[in-house]
Picture 1 (cartoon, rainbow, N blue to C red):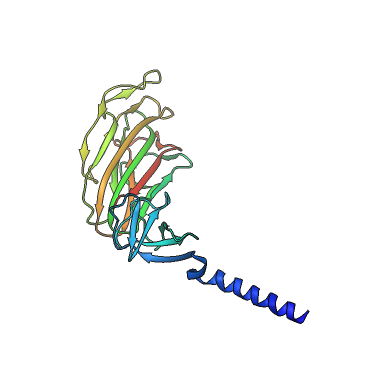
Picture 2 (tube, rainbow, N blue to C red; picture 1 turned 30 degrees about the horizontal axis):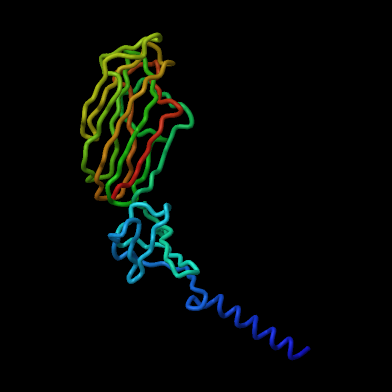
Length: 242
């Protein structure tokens, strides 16, 4: 029994050593820094290792710290970036309104408390605002953007023209198609009842040089005690491009 137990222990120890030694088991998990986005489609070089990217690893860049997985056959796979606490290239983030917000008797532009997002790195961002708003025709609806200091780019504004008054039975009409600075006030037309919503779309590809906040500002164009509103379902979408 003693000899059998000793032999069994030796076998178990050898098996354990094999599981722990990558040279033996031909499998490994490690991290590394991308040194080249390889010419071979779908691969990156991490030093001397050429690894095929998984679908989880999009828009690779030199300098990325990535998770590498080696299969039992010796093939290497780049699973994706290791979190660095910053906004990864290719990642899209959202902010949205879960409830309607009314603003009355004010023409002072102010950040919306929901449609706002910190840009915690410098880079290139694709920003979109999809707005469901309502206002009586005497008040109109006015917007601008808050952006980080030093940001370059322009924003477009698409929606009912500021002179347009839509009715409860007709939601179409003349539109606006301008491209503007971030702080330029854009005025939209509305319907004849602040319970009837209109749609506006604003977008930009912006280049930031400092951290800061991107937010939609809005107010009435003409002060009215009948509230203008930004409705539940409006949302903001931001993708880091570079």
